[in-house]
Length: 246
Image (cartoon, rainbow, N blue to C red):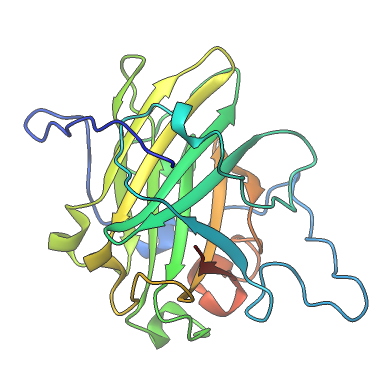
């Protein structure tokens, strides 16, 4: 059974920043190294669409400590955009929340604590009711989060920025931890169940989902759609879909 070892989050003096970015700061120039996801074969729904969502496995227990040894049996999400091996993201869930484990290959870690997407970070986009809203102004159930390494040291508590769509009190419960590696860095994050409401954390629940792995301010990898095309970062209808599985 999959299990992670707990590492306590240090709130006082920690290098975690929870903030609200200006909406106009989120769009980025369309990255030159991105490409559209391949079309599904005839007669099949595109992987990651609402009719063919990507399955996310349930685990018994999970916490955030930056140690990915226990993630070995979890498969990474399909990554259709990258032309090179930029990194990978694994997702899992428990009754307590949604958890992610990111592995990144990079020669240099660039940090922007106020606007993480301008440096090295992962942006996570979630539509909690999977309603496929046209834009963020059309829903109260979608959000954009950014998780990133910090400037100093080789690991520890990471930077957390909520760009839009989440309540401040709920955002304070998000967690992020990272570690520098020989090839780049690894990062874990969690989004608790109360932040994901009205979604129920149970088998069969679908969530609108996208992510962008940003390297030096450009999206080196994405899950389903290009966040920089036609303000996709704020358009849940363009995101992919995951489903909570056993």
